[in-house]
Image 1 (cartoon, rainbow, N blue to C red):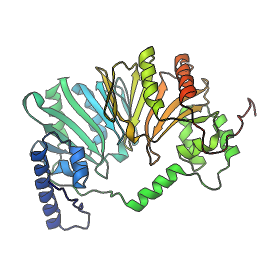
Image 2 (image 1 turned 30 degrees about the vertical axis):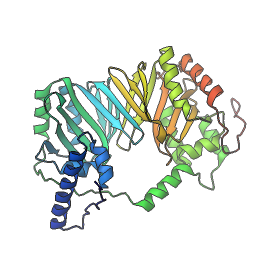
Image 3 (image 1 turned 90 degrees about the vertical axis):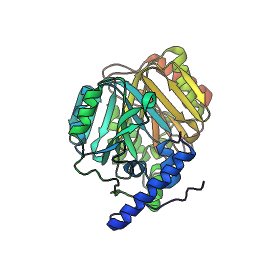
Length: 387
């Protein structure tokens, strides 16, 4: 069967156009499912040329419930569900963590969850929410799913065998939207030209970059959380900064370094931190990784409370990055796709006030010895202490 792309509706579409579009979309998705009943909704949306949220909206009233947009309050009540599986992903990485939402705090549009499920939440990117029932019998799954203005998933919460399902259903009813229309009109639409401009900014430094001042500011960092503000001061994204700064602070590695880092951490039982994010959420695992498995393009961590699925074919660059702090140098392994978007970040397990784990530094030295590449810019000498 050929699945021709259909163009999404816009705010200027008539009511009749919207109804017709989603009616056609529902029929096309049904045909896809009849052809392949294991096809995931994300892949179906890609084949049909629409967003995942638009596709999900076609099933409102048939196992899908629209949620209202009081997402901050909903997340403060997620602890009542007990054990769940939290899922955050981007195109290259899927991060799944099982536990309970605890210690949630909200500061403006920023949310923090600091329990086993460790999150950095950007609520200004949350636009659409659905409660979803999938399958039946032993294959039944219930979830809460949240999407940005482009209809891309930012976070999903899946019930498991230890979830309080009464609390789950009560939560869905409390946040059930008044209108249960089987369609949505996206409030953001990806434009090819703007996407190209964004990709260019992610990969190229401004022509007037003052590299010496960048190195000075970098050398004076006191906290890793100040790093983004420093980049913003210089109108820089990460990859251009890393290419400019010099190998003492940022060193490119072969892409195999990502997989080898996980293999080494598992072999030495080294506790690490694994960050995966998108524009609305960053999700973090802290602890060891144990069960690793390659399945085609996917390299997987398959532990009882943590799964990571990494499509390593989508990795384009890997950088070892060092940042000064009041606790000493903190080193990270950062992974990027071909557009220059960060898809994953690895640290050794650490807490403020404590130095970086020696085992993590040893692991990184091994990666450097095996996978170091030559940066595509001049490498400047390191700044001496006190300079």
